Image 1 (cartoon, each protein chain N blue to C red):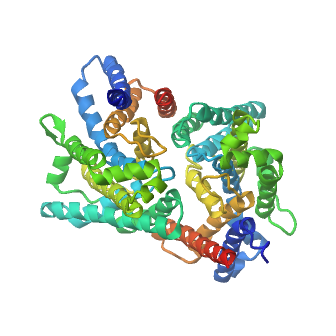
Image 2: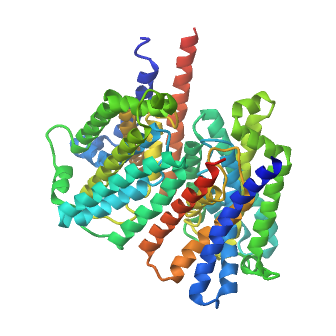
Image 3: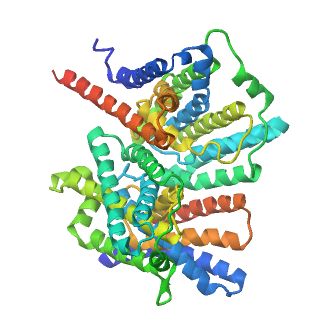
Length: 315
Length: 316
């Protein structure tokens, strides 16, 4: 029992239970969602959000915050809907260069001791600007292959669920099981001790930011696969969604304490919250507000459970 | 030693003014000096909005790492919509309307801090969740209606006194108040002390939670006041009117030389940074760049200024 309620397990348990509770509430309100089609429809848009949330999680793991996430995902989506569709090679080169820029930013922030919030804020203008140059008005087309993947209908379990599980598993392997992940989280916990034990902070930060860029690029491509077209503002709200997703999933702002599985669950919860609210027939005026309220409720539950755990420890 | 420290402070805030002046000069060069007065007046008018919200954000950021208020845009929108709906074009209700704007700020600020304190969640998430609720409240009260402000109020908002925009006077009054509060009052010293080391401040007997609460309220009140003036200036409240001030409020604070790590802030720098941010956009407009390129340049310039400024602070 004690090991089951360890800090790490609780970190996953609370977000998972919130998701299950929300899912039950949705099933109760609208039993027809309890089907292959229903689940797929509800969770489809969660896939790009989950990828963006994982990307944000990498940045949070090294104690930074990326305010350009939404703009960057929009930019990736625009590249995917234009270059990647028409001339894949150039598209891949552009996206690879963008990931390189991400790694560079991670290094520059460290070398010049800059506030990550402001640098990424500045970068959000750059990515948005590039996206506007690429697609001044909504348009473009999704590459065939991603469209095929996103609309495929595997037996038994909908694509959206499979994709979420794969994302969570891959991110878990990188962050929790690989030696790089351990060092990265160590950097978030205490960068000086990591440096003194002989690791290159620059290399770790470059890797971390590059991985964040990679996941954000995938978010953009997947998003285009779902929507079949892109525009420069398509994913701007992902900045705040991704931060909220990481925190909902049990991650913290400092100390390298993140949970990849939790982050995916957090993203699913946020997406499901939107469906839940529309099933509740809440007036559209209050939809965003109710989403804020759900965020608050989940965090309140987490607080209560954490407190109970602390009490048990003391006794 | 003291004089050395003073000159350092001096150079820090002068930096943003230098950047603003350079951009101003480049713009004037292009127009051949013809729009010199107009450009300066417009810059001061628009900068005053960023200055008012920037001051609030500065106090919050001074509290230390993790402290930030993301509910500023929503508060501005709510204040603008509710006040103009209440005033409804009746000039006699201008002053009560202003008090309502302040009351909305107090309400949002208190709710923000209650969330931070009760749920022990990071301010960024607490104020984000709060902003969703506040934004919804604004949508619900407004419903897309655009109620015009009373003539005398909008005349004031677009008018000039002694050749200086009235709104710049308002921003100046707020800034002087903010400067005195930060530098000369016990409250300001407390805010800085908390930002430098919360634990030490608590041990030294600073009422940490009370000060934090008051700071979040102050920030929300300034956002409410700014929303009131912005709605009056632009002839009615719009649901997205606060949008750009989320990033703007953070950017002017940091470019103005306030430390993001907290405990070290700078009021004059906010003026330089606000003027700079507006002038960059108008310069790029004047030179006829299209929207996408303009945004890229804005981003590059923000990062460039931060890097340039950091080489000075690093030597500290």
